[in-house]
Image 1 (cartoon, rainbow, N blue to C red):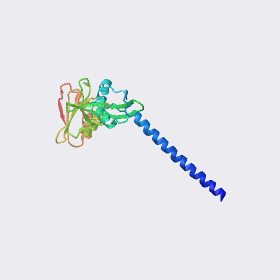
Image 2: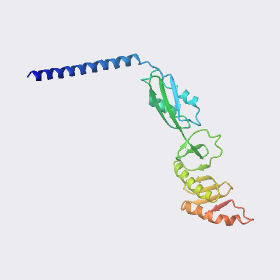
Image 3: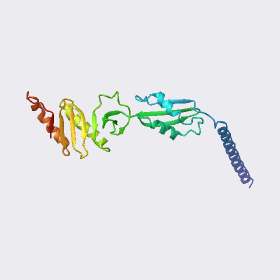
Image 4: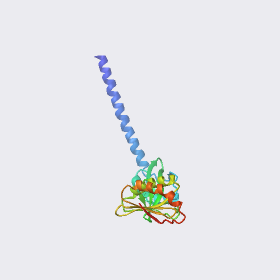
Length: 223
């Protein structure tokens, strides 16, 4: 009985010590939060090496958010502000104690002009951004919603033609889903709506014989 009583006393004492420690820790954390609730953001770190978006523009955009409190900073709001910049594809924002936020930016990679006023990225997604300096990109045209299909088709045809020393410079998809291609030598290929790849291959097969004719000046080929 004496041994049992000592075990009980030890157990109760240990439990009380644990409860007291938890109360002290909780109180300390609460006091620390109160003392540091006004900690401000003092440092912005931009990562990802953006090529088309000026780092200063990213910082100016972030400063539109309320940076007065580290704890109350709305990370999603900052993320949306940067996401709205023209060239930004994705962005992640992370707080770093005690006064820093890190912003990792991934930009669109432009691969083609779309309907003259937009650009396409490597995933076939259209986006709006300044394209004055992007003069060497192919021109693609098509109805809204056909961006990805047009880009996939362009890559397929371009690969087929390159093997045969021909260069595809432009592609158009009509409202009726009829395809047209333009080569850099000025020839237009009308493919229609079906068997596009077969018709391009048909052109590739016959074109060398057309080149041999000195009197042949081809503008359009209806396939």
